Image 1: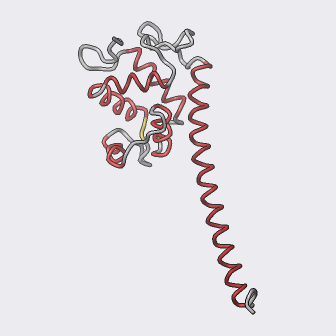
Image 2 (image 1 turned 60 degrees about the vertical axis):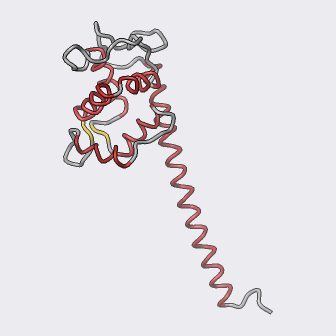
Image 3 (image 1 turned 180 degrees about the vertical axis):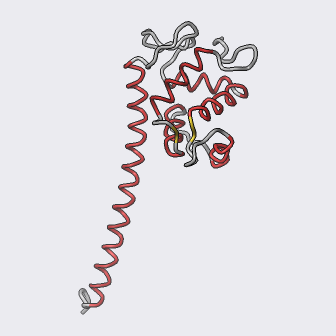
Length: 171
């Protein structure tokens, strides 16, 4: 059985808090936009996203003036999830490359209740960075493909209209 991520007062344990700090720093540049948060969620959940109701709950967590989730909001979200479904938080940690000791699976030093290094070990950090980058790249590729398909459809429509105006193809 994995150790608790919350202490006896239902507060984040120091090791879990240090790990979340590192994850936030790795993923967000000061705050999460909805697309960035969705990319994080997909990376942790085999491509599954938050639904509209869950996205709507983002407002209940600390956000900045632009509506982006702050580090405090991320902590609040993870705290709420851990209180309700600790197994989901452990699944997220496993997907991020951590084992039950809150250490990277590589065995290299990482966050623990005794010490919390300022940055995630390079192999774990780069794995998360790579997965998030792949997810974002796939989304960008899909958007670009959709835009190209739309442009091609418009060009085909224009060619068809000009062809009809010039009576090309009619006998």
